[in-house]
Image 1 (tube, each protein chain N blue to C red):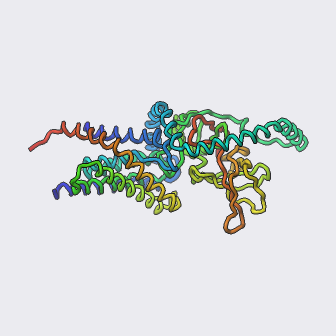
Image 2 (image 1 turned 90 degrees about the horizontal axis):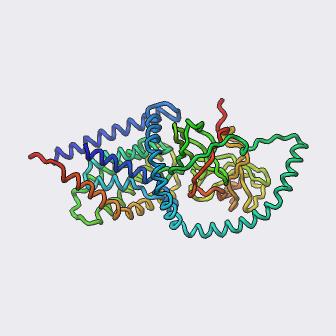
Image 3 (image 1 turned 120 degrees about the horizontal axis):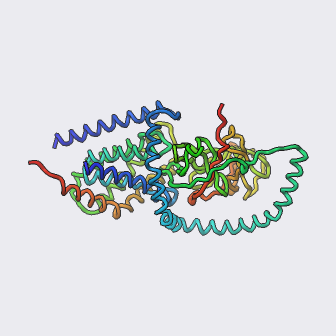
Length: 281
Length: 168
């Protein structure tokens, strides 16, 4: 009995020493690309991702169904909101051709040549899996550095901003979703052009902070990327719509809660903006 | 050797199912942790050494897929695998309540430890309410998985135990 418990303790001590080595290596390695752990991470993703791809395709319909059943209440509310939104958008759509013409005319008069993110190079990729943690919101894509993807590039869907690439392996990459609390992006209100910082809050609405307290924010107003993030995100990508406005306790700024335009629980095909990403100095 | 391969395969399957199926089952913004259910189940069935080795390996595998410091999940899972394995001989009951309680309590400890380690390293520190939400809901969801996962793992372990040759 004593010999046995001694063996257990020896195994525990060896594993604790191994953990200490791993944690130390991770800290010494930092955020850089080199190091044995980065190599291991790359290898793990290369092994796991093709299997995730296969399993994901088999289980996706069942998973979507269970997820829909589990979120039935919120889906019903969302449905009502979307119906109201469709009505509103239909009426707005009728004005678009006229607004576009006027916009072109004014741009021509002022000699403005604005960069349009939809005109850049894009790469379509499929979401094959999600991060395994309850503390981070990440997804894996079936395209990687061999397809031209590199860390920091913006990822969008047909609706708007999805996130940015945080890991680019050979044939697979990882996206930090815009709803992750670690994700922050410079954002702009479309009507007043007032800017602030948009941060993720998990599946709750996004938090749009540091807005001038004097600015009036309308419910349902669209928020887009400001494009001031040293070039990480191009300007004008839709992020969400204002749902609620709260004044910060210090009253020096106000905060708006923004419902994302992208449904993050049903991400399937996304576009990686190959011309985006941090400008290398 | 074959048992080792089987344990590794079970852990890999758990990681794959966690990232493809269970990550989608976010109810109240929390999903169950299948990998932890597997680690604690093996600790209950096989004792502290297997519990801690599988906790470390499974946690390390999970760490490599996370955007967080590597080693923290490995550390919390190995400690829980060891603790559950050490406690097991002192419980005489063989009913389903043993794995149910073990996995519920083990999940609380492992998830709590992970949050503590993250806070100590100054990494992602969720609000207290969010931290409690994750700890408690993960424990409840994991306990709900016990009737499906534990008997399956026990069958696998027993199958290989029967093949073992004892030397007197």
